[in-house]
Length: 124
Image (tube, rainbow, N blue to C red):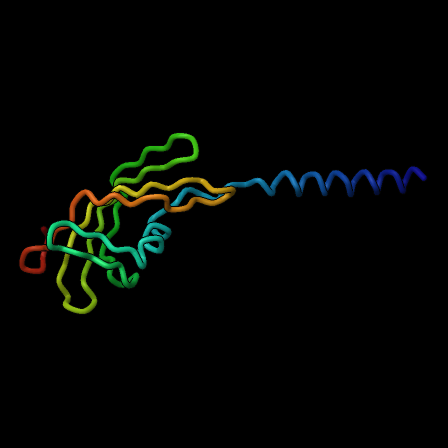
């Protein structure tokens, strides 16, 4: 009888411990998630328009700054891009806002700060 009660107690402790771990929030978005979240998005400034087609277009992605408050994260991101069709290079400065939804972070908004073409295929 005591052995049976101890076994039941041990099983309950394991189940409770398992359920406590279920509320773990996924890590904050990093460069990989930023790149993936932008695929399919379009940004426009003046006469320049950039459509994010593929991961191979990204030459460099830098999180310049971030602000977190509650369930919201704002990233100031600089992205060096190369057009997969023409080879032309561009730089985009973007504010990306993420919000926590349940246990994951989801892209909420994209604000384009600047989009410019590189001069002579080099740095802007």
